[in-house]
Image 1 (cartoon, helix red, strand yellow):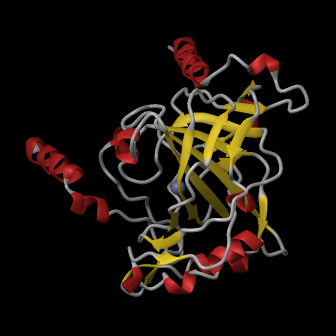
Image 2 (cartoon, protein in one colour; image 1 turned 90 degrees about the vertical axis):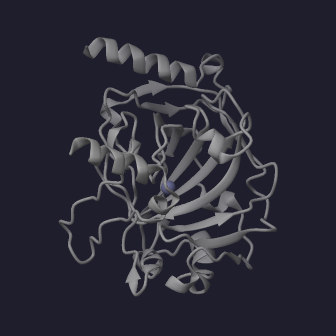
Length: 304
Ligand SMILES: [Zn+2]
């Protein structure tokens, strides 16, 4: 019996059809709905995301400034797709690169998507929206390869707080939603007509963030992500967030929520970075993501 169960798991976690079959619980119609099992690393992993980011449990860090190269550029070939799990934007201009901070490599912007409500919580508080800017380590030729390395991907998370003032950048994304929201439009990209600069989706303060070693928050849940969650949040109205809930993931079924439930930290170190931009942060110059991994190992020894 156990062998049969095991065989089914192996078969289905390798099959492409499995990847299309995962879902979020419909919390709109049942607020106590359990989170479904997604299988594979999603169930068995030890450095899964998202997590609660708690200032009082974080280690204080100082790094060089993060450098976001060409994030002010207007996008020329951007498209948007309802992939049945989120709204995602692809085909950003070439040469949009994130480096610096505690990162040991250059990371290229691959895609941006949104979660409603937020996946990460800060000091146990959930936010109405979280934008994920997914970057690939330039050492690796594509996302598939990058997901098999522990430093393969950097995701920058930007959280939004409830406000009376609509957010202009989120507004320009919403303008395109009509064209992708129906179930019949799933996996059919549309060109984004209006201009959008990625920096419009980012706060002023880029030197203050939580960073930790985690995973993709959707299957395969690969444990290849260095997370950078910015502490400054941006305003959004609940009316704007409700526009995203009109997205359909199945015939006549709306994607009311697409956040994964919080995962166990498992002795991982979360570093709260507050970089000193006036001096360039000389003290942090030699620090790297390797340091975070070392700290994680040291913490494990302490707890064992
Ligand atoms: Zn995401």
